[in-house]
Length: 329
Picture 1 (cartoon, rainbow, N blue to C red):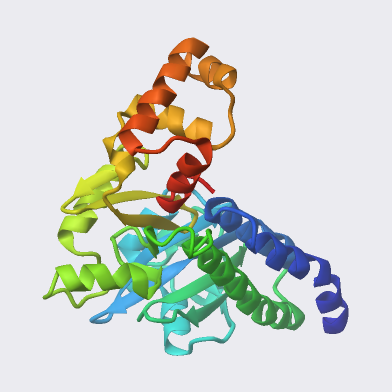
Picture 2: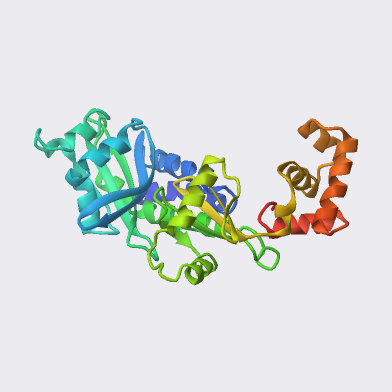
C-alpha cells in the first residue's frame, strides 16, 4: 500500500520541482499547499514559518486553505496552548500525529479547532538554514472524516521534505532571476511579515552591514524596514532611503525585498520611465501609445527625451540598462 501511494506521487513530484523553476513565488506557494491537500486527501491545510523566542511561539508567515479567515488571529490568542506546535518544536523533522479528541474541554486550543472542525492533524517541521525558525506544514481532518492511517503518516513524512526542497529552489531561483554579469546592481532577500530575513544571499547583507555598523540581527535595520513598508503601501514602487532604492512586494508565504543603488534611470519621470520600460520590452510606438493613451508622435518625443537623459542612443542600450537595474527580465 505504501509503495503504491509513493509510486502514484511520481508525476506530482516531477511537476513540483519543474514548476519551482518557472513560477513566481506567490503562485508557487498556492500550488504547493493545494498539492499537499490533494496528495493527503484533506480539505484543510496550514503551511508557514514559526519561530520561538523565550518560550513563546511566533508565526512569521503562513498560508492556509480550507480554514476560516480568523484562523491565524485565533491561533495567536491560544498559541501557548498549541500542543501541535509544542510537539513539532520538541521533535523537529519528524511527522507528528495529533488527535484532539483527547483534549479536555477546558483546554484553550478548543477555541481554535472547534469552529473549523479540526480533530485530526498530521504536522511536520523542517529547520530553516541561517535562521532559528522552522518551516511547518500541517494537514487536518474533521470529526466526520476518516482517520489518518499509518500509511498516511509515512507518505506525509516523505512528502514534506520534498515540498520544502522545491520551495527553497523556488526562492533561490528568484533571488537571482537574471544573469549575474548582466544584473550586478540589484540584491534580493525574502523576509517575513515582521521584516525578519528568511532567505538571502551575501550580496544583500554586505552593503547593509557595511552601512549599519551596529546591526547584527536577522531583522532588517529600522530605516530599511520603514522604507520597505512604504514601498508596499505604494504597490511595490521604489522608495528612496539614503543612497539606495528599496521595493517590497508579496511573494506567497513571504515578501521579496529588492535593494539597489541609485542609477541613471532615476533621472526619468514616472511617465518617461513607463515609456522606457515598455519600449525596452519590445513594444512599438503604436502599442505604447495605445496602452498609455498617448499619440505615437508623443511617444517618439518621449523616447528622444529618455535617450537624452540617459546619454544613450539606441534601444539595446536602454534594454540593457533596464535589465541591470532589475526592471526587466
